Length: 229
Length: 188
Image (cartoon, rainbow over the protein chains, first blue to last red):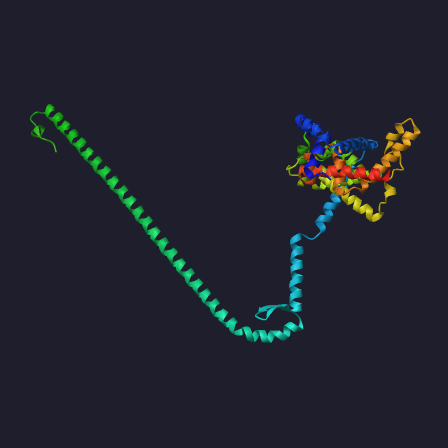
């Protein structure tokens, strides 16, 4: 029996999967192995003989597509009527729990070893188990209580911290807002002052112009030489 | 639609286009029938199995994800389906060697072409022997031989269908040819 590599080579040779160079090398090698050469010739003959098994004329219509559509509809309907996977899982889980409850399954692991008991045996051992572990249960309860208390304290502290942080943030925000508003008022007042000064200058100029006009018309008027406001 | 690739037709068919699926049937039914006939040796069974195969293809078409070519996907579905069909029919009636042997001339009509009655008889005898020997081959060797010799799949395509390396396909083909030769020589 040739090795796997040789088998692959022979198949490549028979099925024309070799390059010209590979084929030349293989042909040269074959001269040294008459048995292998005969084997390959037999395989080639076998392949030719296999093709004498011709397929008959296939019927004109092989596949009835209408039947496929109607059949697939039926299958889909059948699939839909079955319970969904989750409900089946819940059902199996329920049965399992019920069985556990009925059998009173008890699994224990102690120094004496691992043991599983159920039914009457479990009931007999339950009193011993209760006595043995009652102290431990109390201890565990105390520990659990401490953990819960610690958790509540931690949670309260966290909430207080958050509230303080919120107040500080809002205070900072309102201060900023006040600063901004004051700045706006200051700007408005400065603008108002500037405008008032401008009006005063304009009014002064207008009055002086008026006096000049009056003195030009009536030089006897004592007010004509006035300096205005 | 005639110019569409198989993969595009597959996408179209999976979204409910029955014309696309009709086109797939039109393109592939003869090849699938040919494959089934090589495994089942019987015209009626091959027809029934082909119908089953396309029913499965229709049901599973949405699972074709384009990771492989449609051709190799179809051949995988077809081979699984043919296996199921054989299992079912084996339950009905166990297949014995003689049932494989061809009594109906329609399936291997080639020997009728021969003018020499002795030659024709010899040819018929050989084909029956070939069928019997093929049925005795280990399943994987037979699949490789049939896909390669009668369905013209490349080694890569066969490897894809059988989900194994190309080297394994070639090795199985070698063993298949060798076993076939031994069976035939042993019987003759």
